[in-house]
Image 1 (tube, rainbow, N blue to C red):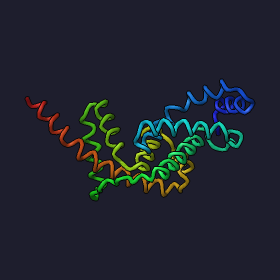
Image 2 (cartoon, one colour):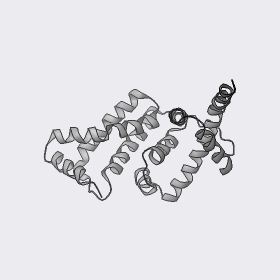
Image 3 (cartoon, helix red, strand yellow):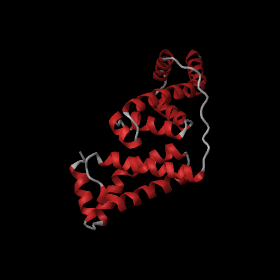
Image 4 (spheres, helix red, strand yellow):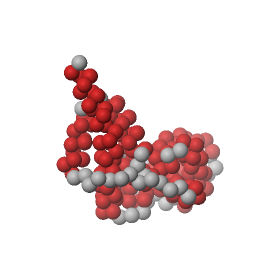
Length: 196
């Protein structure tokens, strides 16, 4: 399942080619850092966890069997490294209070988002995702921004596909609550500017 390029690099690294490891790091550093930042919500800690992830990856490359995509495997290493850091810091993450959002209300929020410029919309979504608990922002990032399949996410997080579906739905409800509070003032302001 691993791409040929990744497998070639992995073989070269195992044979001692440090340049090949630099290439592998370059290929995955942005993904690993983004996921760490989503979970830890702190740039310095995310950078440290990203480094730890690559150190762990380097040390255990010979155990990678290639039966899943390499990206899935490195996501899993990053995820577990983040969980270790959270436990170590004994962080108490504030959960967002959730009003019971119906599927119709979530769809209404999606429609409201369509009325905002694409760049503004993406920035608003990114800001709101940062306000979610770590695990929720991590799952939404994997599914919506990294376009991973439910099967891939299941392998990374270590829970069933059905559980992932349930968690993603709950995450979207939380995100909808945050988006509603964040975006309604922006949309109102946008319409007022249009009328002038």
